[in-house]
Amino acid sequence: MEARASSSLTGARTFIRGILGGLDAPVAQTVAAAGGDVAMVIDRDGIIRDMALGNEQMARDGADSWLDRPWAETVTAESRRKVDELLRDALSQGRTRWREVNQVTPTRDSLMVRYVAVDAGRDGRVIAIGRDDRAVAEMQQRLVAAQQAMERDYSRLRDAEFRYRLLFQTSSEAVIIVDPVTRRIIEANPAAHAYTGADKTSLAGESFIRIFDAASQDGAASLLTVAQSTAQTNRTQMRLSSQRRDFLVSASLFRQDRGSQCLVRLSPADHVEQAPSNAAVRLQGVMERMPDAFVVTDSAMRIISANTAFLELVRVGAEPQVQGQPLNRFLGRAGLDRNLLLDSIQDHGYVRNFNTVVRDQYDEQEDVDVSGASAPDGESTCFGFAIRRSSRRIGDRAVQAPELGRSVAQLTELVGRVKLKELVRETTDLVERLCIEAALELTKDNRASAADVLGLSRQSLYSKLHRFGLVNPSSTEG
Image (cartoon, rainbow, N blue to C red; front, side, top):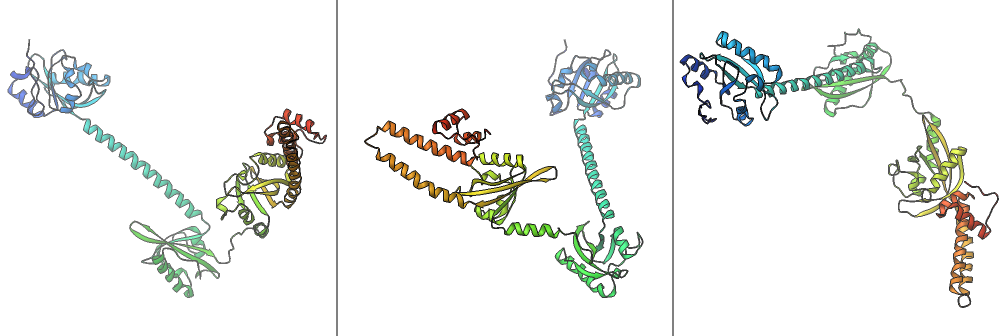
């Protein structure tokens, strides 16, 4: 029984069993010169009989588990053919070339090791010396990843350049790239060539100043100087030497390849940009100055725009503070009025003099009358609402308040003559009647909506209507 010796990883490599102790001098010299991370003694049956580890990482991975196992069983399936060839070539040729083999350890499914096999010169034994190639493999992976990243960056740059070229070439506006130091044209698009009357390639390298007539050349030189100091210039009226009309010329400075270049834009001075129609401008001005509040919402009843009167009504300083807010944040009672407004507009296309309340940002309420309509906006629909303070409802309240006061006074006079239980019942009936009348007025005699306002079921509301004699044949069921 051969004795097993310990292996030192910090000093010289030693074989576990010392099988190579009697190797011939030339073989031992060859093994030592190989300088691998692992050396294995393999018998004629391909079984690993001894090994020496000179790599701490391979030892931690459990490479010593290969001992007493066929070498072909310690590698991945695609490397078994390589193992057979290494053993065969070592016995026939004395030494093989380096081959990459994927080993399997208890902690790793694949460990790349480069092996060279040497004939040991006794009983068909072979020495296999291996070098751990995981560092090389990781470096190769990083190199591949870097190459892929470079390809992606190059593709993005190429796409960006293509878009720039397409925009540059198809733009109807004349664009010229100028070197502000030499004042020579670097590049110009087809529109610039057409305005200057030059061939497609003749402007490159030409003096930028000379494409203008004598009276405008000083202005062109000053334009480039101002662009270098302020990065952008205002449009200046100049005349090209090949044209009898004036052009508006502006320049913008940008940096490229550690240098500065100017992008010069030319457009005919007599070209008037398409402006909004006068009717639309006048309408917008009138709506902004209206004394009544006006607000436009999208199909979800979120505010798109509002005039100054609406901002004053809800006590908001600027239009962006209300844009995007739901309209029922400021208009209506507990969400019900929003549904009634939508139902009326969807049924009839408009609503007129709808009585409700508006709340400002401090939750103070004010009675208002609302008129609104829907309008198509492309594939969706928008709504417009005109909101006016309601003076009529204030007058109604002034009339109703004394009546309510007299009723309460009459009830208090009954104290001492009528039992409290009966007095409370009569007071409750009075309050219920007043609330039901207010709800019916608010919903324009729509019983279903009035029930929602009061928080009652329809059956309970109908019962109370009959009880108080408020049944109106013209009322709608909703």
